[in-house]
Image (cartoon, rainbow, N blue to C red; front, side, top):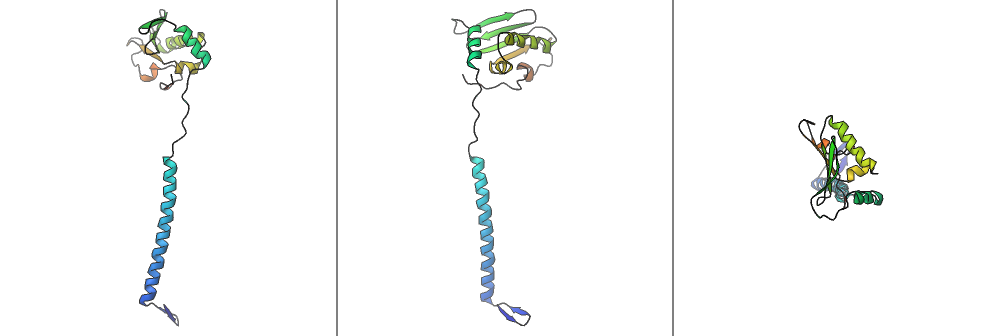
Length: 161
């Protein structure tokens, strides 16, 4: 590149140097962008910390064991049977089924949950005990999956045995 007065003249050698410098700047910028992007991707691939599975406390587990004690390996135990609801423990599945027999559904469901709380279980325990509620079309015509779990438990909680 030669400067003559106010004019700048470019020869082939100067053009090659300018193109090489521009290419180097572009490559450095692209490399920096790729490096930053790959670090963010690696962060996204790192395993997220896992929450320990929720389990019944020792006291609650003891309550459950005393409530469901049997020599049977399968079948069920009727734990409560009244005009409003029936509570059955399925031995093999380690699960409680509550049949709501009367309307209004929500009120009877709360009474059946009160039965469990009366035995010493907390609201969180009700979510961890694997309790399923069911009703007839007469007692709950619009029965949905949210009706099948205890109040306050949006979805069934996966627990550790």
